[in-house]
Image (cartoon, rainbow, N blue to C red; front, top):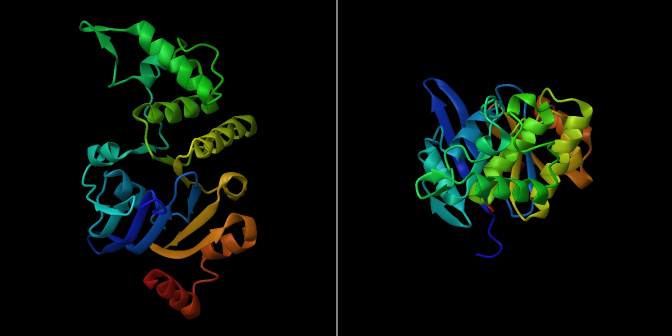
Length: 258
């Protein structure tokens, strides 16, 4: 289906004992689109990301990949489909250089020996294609700035040629210039035709790069907004629950049934 979203969640739910973390959540992400996933602490963002990435499969609901229902029961299933997730902790090895981190677990070998030349060449090509500025691909990651580390983690996720990239708070704890570098990279991912899910608390970042904003509140959908036609105040109102009432819930159910 040419017009089908890359990823669609239909009535996804997740429970931890007596706690209903997600309840009937819907989400769609198309190719060449950045969808920001926002919500207050405890809204269910991390749980939803883990359900998509296979780290915490949903209890109920359907995940569709290009319009086809799929099962994502473990991270390997998500990776096989073309879903790459960059978590907030980055999972980089400080003692390894940039090349070593990019190819960690997927090293290129020739005759049973690591092909350092091929890996370095491919690393340079990948970073150049994303306009990522690193002094040297042989620098230990520990010597890089926070923004550079984040871009390396994102670049590593692209080695598997994913169709969907999930970025979990990519600008958290970064300075102004470093944040700008990461936001530039998010836009380049969209320009490459990838679908991007951006989890963020920063409304300025969201307004700068997202096409649509999906709001979660208490594990439920509380609105999806077009960034171009929605004010920051309207999005914040949805996050805090100012728009959560009987009328908006009826409208949400009607839209979900279409």
